[in-house]
Image (cartoon, rainbow, N blue to C red; front, top):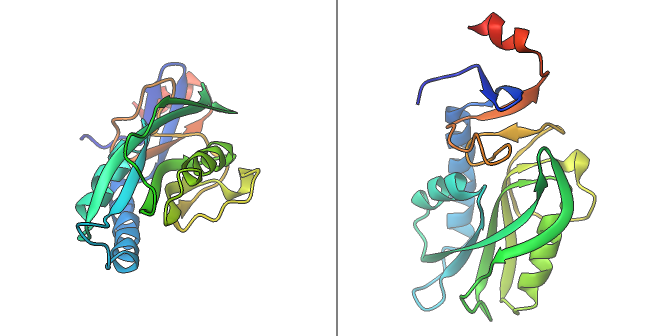
Length: 195
């Protein structure tokens, strides 16, 4: 994909925040930890990886390519964003059909913001009585998190910025960028100066 410093999505402008090479490096590090932590998983007791759609799809795809453990990949879809703000209300749209009772489970998320979505998802999955239930997130806004979460794998802690790219979106646009971009001022002159 062509390299961009600034991108325009609808009425907003975003500047590159985390490049694709940095993303690859941090995901490689997390994959090594997961491989080590779950090396004893077997065909009969694999790691059940649950990707949270839609945002996690690029991160999850790159992450699992680096895993050499026995694992299954499943998806669940929840929603808590409207525009650039999280609503804090979780709506489960696509449920999990895999029985996770007495299984090792890893939730994979693109970003933990207020933490409300992850807390609710963690609660719902814990009711299914997995053997272990851990969390992995690409990005973590610790400064904005409203609840205590024990996130086992955090690829990168970020400031309170609205970000798109690499699966993250602004009103369903911008997911396809191979880097992550952060929101900047809505001034058209910023775009004009760079082009």
